Amino acid sequence: MTHARPLRSTTTGAIRGSIRVPGDKSISHRSLMLGAIAVGETVIHGLLEGEDVLHTAAAMRLLGAQAEREDNGQGAGVWRVRGVGLGALQEPAQVLDMGNSGTAARLLMGLVAGHPITCVFTGDASLNKRPMARVTKPLEEMGARFVGRSGGRLPLTVVGSGDLVPITYRLPVASAQVKSAILLAGLNTAGATTVIEAEPTRDHTELMLRHFGATVTTERLEDGALAVTVIGQPELTGRTIHVPADPSSAAFPAVAALLRPGSELLLNDVGMNPRRTGLYDTLVEMGADIAFENRRDEAGEPVADLRVRHSALKGIVVPADRAPSMIDEYPVLAAAAACAEGTTVMLGLKELRVKESDRLAMVAEGLTRCGVSVEVGADDSLTVHGTGKPPKGGATVATAMDHRIAMSFLVLGMASEEPISVDDGAFIDTSFPDFVDLMNGLGAKISEA
Image 1 (tube, rainbow, N blue to C red):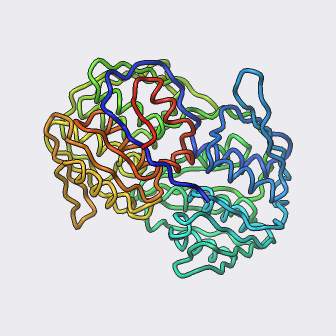
Image 2: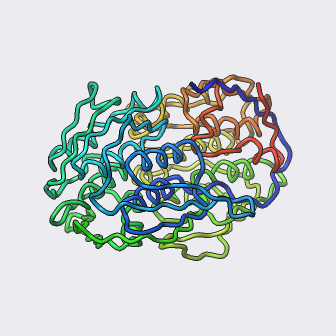
Image 3: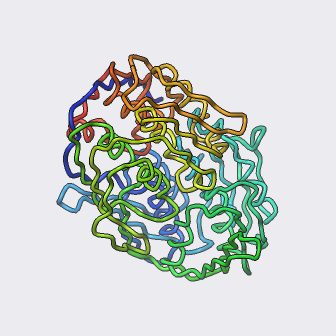
């Protein structure tokens, strides 16, 4: 049982320093999962050691793989995963607890669906409310079976099969998690499994599958959609992986630096996968001074160092087609928009309603409590009316066990006229361990409320 941790954020001076935020959560999950079904050893540098990823590591051990951390003597951990080979995951002796992680739950359902084993998935109170039917439906078409609560919610039992059939599946909603679950299930089928997506979503699964030796192709269809195909039963071989810093986590100190006069911040080794950089594209359009330095590739993923300086932001319209590349960053973008000059309109946010919380409603409610004028449209849009100066603040914001809601309002509290508190910051550790200490080291004033 996680105990609530109320936190309070007070107006601060300049945000200054040079840091590396924790490793990318999406890539960390995938490196553990693919390492577990590869032959040989996978060595992972920079793995995010947040609660979500540690739940994935524990699940892979229950499924028969070895996944252990060793200290490299320099204060950082190196993870070694010894895989069991494709199709050789073992039936776990106990329930797989995925904590707060929808990514881990959905991807791992796909992975175990292609094995002749039965697994029971559960999670915390937040995860157990989230819909899983979008994943179970295509996996059932392939031959897996599921028994769960209404809407396919956890706790849920997966009855896998070693004889899944490959399918071609058109995604009804833009979701890298659904796409990845199908591709991972397709690994242990005899043939080609194809996912068609109308809008490009995160492609970390495709990039990492290729890195481990699988054949994955991406083809643009006549209607503009992308067809992603994996060829089943590849020989996956253990690899060395350097996990870049998470662009979603880097968003919080970046926005804090933009909002505070005199700030200059260097964020090192940030993943710059073009399907993850929608927030940074948006901030630059709003007038943000962000320089992308030392661009390079690491294990198939583009990386850069980000130099961020205080900037006067202006309101813009954020198009709906940008949503898949920044779906996790809208809460902190809303904090930036609250301090911008003019109106910011964010379109196409339906997916926010089924994240760790109904983020669209939570952001609107929190901003309103802090004195910001906002509207939620019937079309799942969010309009934020900025005045060019920080909002009043002075409120306690409900987080609904959502780490990104908590961090976003703590960032806003660094700029607001009066302190902003969040009712529970305990869940920040799911994605950003040591967030409070790191931000305070840059000049923030976050304390126990």
